[in-house]
Image (tube, rainbow, N blue to C red; front, side, top):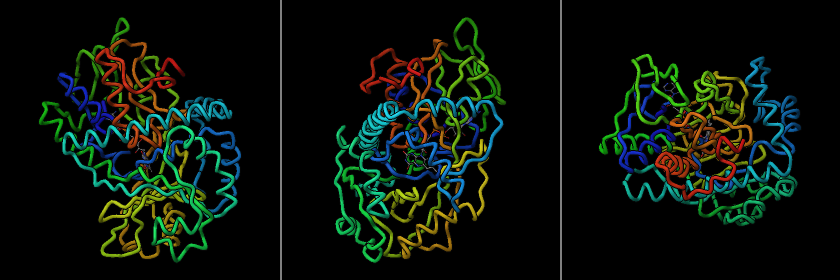
Length: 411
Ligand SMILES: Cc1cc2nc3c(=O)[nH]c(=O)nc-3n(C[C@H](O)[C@H](O)[C@H](O)COP(=O)(O)OP(=O)(O)OC[C@H]3O[C@@H](n4cnc5c(N)ncnc54)[C@H](O)[C@@H]3O)c2cc1C
């Protein structure tokens, strides 16, 4: 169930290990929702869990900001409050550290698996291996957040601490705005790439391997008896198989709840703009995350992808030009000649955010139903590792990925 980057990559691993696979997807093609136009960064350096000791204070401050990176609208949905209580319970320093290291582990493995899979299959993703620079606007904000990156460096991520001068030598188009930079961390082995291009290409490859795709097919319910899933009911009839995979991204909890699986995953909306570079010389070549306003930049060759914001507005994916004001202001300020700002392609989509941060993978109490969900803001980077691990579990093999803290039974 699900033709996003996660569903398609798992289908690939299942087909490669000899299974007959059918993908059910409500759109007419793959990768048309969250995997369509995301932030495009393959960024283990951004594995910090959102459930952090300062999270509540960040939320309170955002209420008083104009164009805040984080926006919260009151929700009366009891599922939201259940998720929120679990999120807050994960905000201790100890849980933050453990969850961050779990995400880091999935992201490092995911990036390595993506590169290996792409080399093996020839499926591309407009990859850009110039590294990622995590940029701070003041020495103060740089110093305040040092610990978050030191934790990652202490656990295997190659990171260089950079002052403003060094940031400019890493990314020369920052030269004219050097006075706006307080410092940064540079991760030379990270990348950018287009999740949609990859998902579409891998789906073609899967089709050649014998995977079938049922498009325009909306899953309505999962039928279970005697502790096993028996069929998936859709608006196109019922589908049955020996085993079932849940990869419906942010919509997964809605289909799992009626069969007794209450998953702490909530949709958190984000916005991206694709700006045509169109011969302009001022687009950054390295990936950048401006940490004070949480705006991400990824150079995809002919396009600069700019993304940001986290909004709690339920399943609403609507957007208007006004929603992009803050993100575009940061983009124009740092990279005034990045591209043709008069022709942005806007998009909004939902991150499937688990209460603690890590994805939720593998077995459920329904013996032939498996999960690959809850990847939040990291699914593009994590996806190839979590897909391989879940396929291994479905095949009865021990995954190479260390599964500590990633199973439903660990929650
Ligand atoms: C603004 C933004 C920026 C991001 N930036 C990054 C980034 O820079 N790096 C990174 O690693 N990650 C990033 N992410 C996260 C990443 O995009 C997601 O984690 C990932 O795309 C999730 O993939 P998925 O396959 O689980 O979900 P999806 O891509 O949403 O796939 C789920 C599929 O299920 C289908 N579906 C849903 N319900 C039904 C149903 N009832 N019946 C049939 N089909 C159904 C949908 O149509 C969809 O195709 C970002 C996310 C957002 C929102």
